[in-house]
Image (cartoon, rainbow, N blue to C red):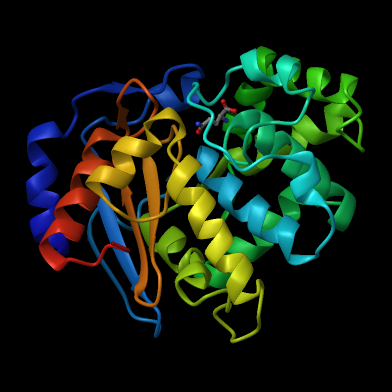
Length: 297
Ligand code: GLN
């Protein structure tokens, strides 16, 4: 079934545009494609370049949110749960909404969540990296320092967002610290295999690979719901229509989707549509779900 999904995505493979806001991402082969399925009971299957690491970018926002929520507190007072209808790096809503970002999956929201995780752990990036290592079993998984450095060098919009949020008193840590951890977790390199395994806790209603609980089943449901409505930015409606699963994308071309009770799917191909979602990855997920009927609807 994964092979058929890959074939179904072939017509759009390489169409669209590879993220080029930093040189380290622009160098990726637009025709690369991988897809992996990790089932709730521990099997993992893949096709294409499924073991090749890529820049996870905004997929990291899913893990910062889960880890930030896992320790309780008042995160939802500091970030909303509504789709923004705007590009992921937009500044426009922040002023009218007084420094409370619309949701945790746009950059502004992820900056607030990173701040919360930094307060909780003292090392927001390390917390995300260690979680991904533990769930994937890949002890070598790490940030790509060249990508992180490039993110910081070209990070004017993110710095603007963070300072603006801080001006409303919605950051507890220094802006520079929060940005450094935000860039670092965005620049983690991981494969479809790693990410499908790491996303499995959401298919297991909050249970980690070792059987311990990260989130209550109610919080796992909530994270999945926010992914469905906000995880693919201002294309979340289209993604829900086509794929019918909670999904989180990143400008590295990866998309992680959750099939509650069944498993997690990750597809990757670097060329993006206008909203910043991979055309071939979304196409393959659409084909897989359409063939199996494994949507939440
Ligand atoms: N690091 C990217 C940014 O902050 C992440 C964006 C994304 O993947 N949508 O702009």
